[in-house]
Image (cartoon, rainbow, N blue to C red; front, side, top):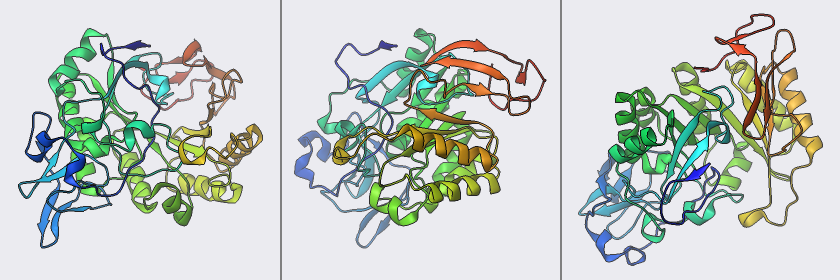
Length: 371
C-alpha cells in the first residue's frame, strides 16, 4: 500500500472512541466561528437546553462553547457545525481486503480517508490517537470531497473507503464525497460501528456501495460498558443495510473477558441467521491488547475457532477468522460443494475460482460484488 499525503499520517485500523463534552478553549481560536473546514451539520434541532445533534443515538445537546462527544460537532452561533470537512488526518491507498471486505471487488485498491473523532468510547480502540481527539488537534491535510474523488482516480482506485475513525461522526464529509464519487462511477465503502439514527442512514444509503459494520458484542450491558453506546441501534442499522442494495460484511472482535462468552456468541449468530444474514460474511477478529485493555491477553486461537464453528452450525455460510495470518482462515469455501474457491494470503489473492459470481466447480451462486 502507498502513503498519499506528503505529511506523516497515522496508519490505524478501524475502531472507535470518544470523549466527554469539552469546553471551547480546547479548540483553536479559529474554531470559535465557522472556518474553512467547517460545514453546517445536516441533522440537528434547537432545544431550550442547547443544540441537539440528531445524526446518531448519542443525540448530544451542545451548548455554546461545547462540542459533541464525537469531538467534531460544535455549537457556533447557535447552529451546529461539523469541523471535520475536507481536513483528513489519514489518507492511504489500501487493498480492499484490509477493511475487511472479502466479497467486494477482490484485489482492488481503495482510497482510504479519515478525520479525527468517533461517537463510541471503546476501551479496546485501536486508533485512539485520532478517535479520541478533534480535527483541531491532529495533523491534517486539505482534501475537499472533489479532491478526494480526483485523488482516487489518479491512484487507480476502484473505491473510496471512509475508515480508520468513525465516519458517522464526519457524516457531512462522507455524504458529499460519496455523492460526488457516485457521479464518477466510483464505489464508496463505509467502515463503521453502525451507530446512526434511521433517517440520516436512509439519506446516506443510496451513495454507499459496501459496508463493514462492527458488531462489538451481543450483550447490551457489556456493549454499553465496552463502547459507551447502546446495542439496539447497531442491530437496527444492520437490518436496514441488509434490506438495501449495500453489500454488507460484519466484524466481531472477540475481546477476552468482554466478548468471548460462547453462549453470547451463539445468541448473536442465531439472531443473524434468523434475521436473514446467512449469506453475509462474518469476520471473527483477534484482539490485541491496546488502549485501556493492555492488561488482557490476545484472543486464544481456540476461542476464535469455536466461534467460527458456532456460526457455521447456526447456518451462516461465510465465516472468517481475522488477524491470524498464514493459517488459511480467510479463504472462501463454497457452501454447496465445500471446495476452496478463493485462496488468500494476507491481503493477497492466490487463487480466485469465482466466475461471474458462481463457484467454478458446482456453479452455486457466491454472494458478493465480484466485478
